[in-house]
Amino acid sequence: MSAIPLLPIPPSRPLLVPSLNALFWGFSSVGLSGFGGVLPFARRMLVDERQWMTAEEFNTQLGMCQFLPGPNVVNLAVVVGKRYQGLPGAITAPLGLLAGPVLIVLLLALLYDHYGTLPQAQGVLRGIAAVGCGLLFAMAWRMGMAIREKPVFWPFTMLTVTAIALLRWPMPLVMIAGLLLSGGMAYWTLGRK
Image 1 (cartoon, rainbow, N blue to C red):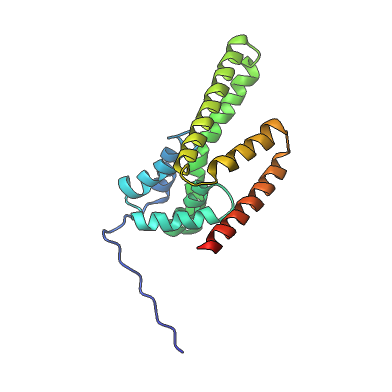
Image 2 (cartoon, rainbow, N blue to C red):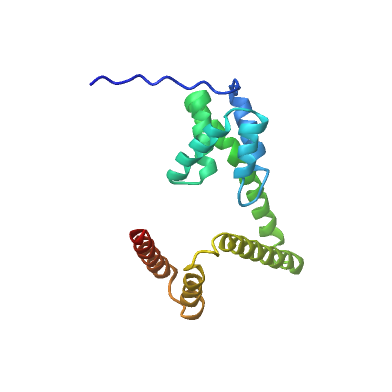
């Protein structure tokens, strides 16, 4: 049985090949664009603005990067850098992605070391913590509302909240129990269909 050679599928538009400099500054703009998640900015930069990838290529590469250990966007930077510039690109792209945020965090750490005990700084940090809690709650709420029509959503949510908040069970135990319970429910539900 002979192997059938696979021919590359030509993209719908010619893709631009970035230089090392373009990789660094492109991913730097992504790294400095958001806090807590820059994936939408990465897609816009790679597909819409710079046209280094098609939308299909982005989805495929992101799917692979989600399978790999580590942050998805950092993995994507490595893949894109390697694709266009080999090993130097695989180093340059994530360096561009992470250099700006690391410098900002170091600067903030220096400022906190010097001014962290001031009441005004403590008030700012309490406000930031409140905003972070609100953002986390809003994200969890939106995720929950996306699956609210599932019949086991509310009981499963109440069990999880009860186990963590009221019974004070350790998080690893709750996660393992939730995994086993949700896996069993999925197996039972799919087996009935």
